[in-house]
Length: 293
Image: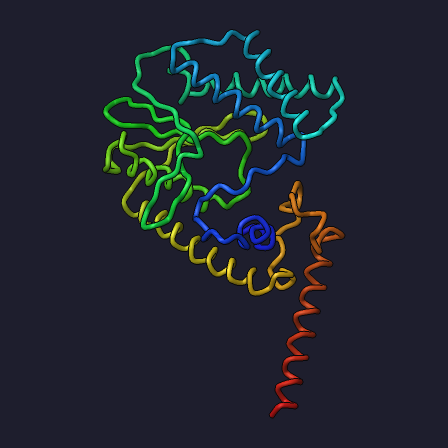
């Protein structure tokens, strides 16, 4: 929504369902090979964790066989034809990324079978807070030293600002507080984020304080207010010509709506045309008002 209001409106804003703060949108086909690769890594890792929870360990050969089959199926479903050599190279990279993830400080005790109470969750698991359904489930919750560590895993670095990321991560704690199987007080939780930066996994812990939780809840309420306003705007202007375009051209990469977007020929030029049209429309309305007066 913040990156490109127009793209958000095309995806969510014109449905009859009220906009939700962290709702998952329609399933969309991946547009790039990297999207396919990222989704496959996450799906393969998820299957591996499910088996690990049942004390079933995957060998390196089995992991490669499953991951390769899943990637080939995903490429076929997306209608992508990728050269065999390039595909093989990316399979090796994906397997390495999964292997390094399992060696991270947060996950290695589980992979090594060290005594831990732990659970895994689906990111599509939602909770409701003040009438807002949002999706902020952690990938894992690990009980150690009398507290639960909520672990979020990002297979690609997000584009949002650092403070915004931290507040969104804190919504994971809010999700956990509403989950029946977990404690209902923030002192019972730690929060760990494991993020891929392109070459390695970076791990960092976030403080969980009442003040930060209050700010995170404020973020939810602000998002809902902004989405409601943007949804009304999109319905009032079905052409979407007046809605703001992307903040930066990097947000246009891989956009599912790019072919029909005014910015297909360049974001800067599209914004200038939009400003010119809005100015012309304002002048026209002002002229009509003067004539009426």
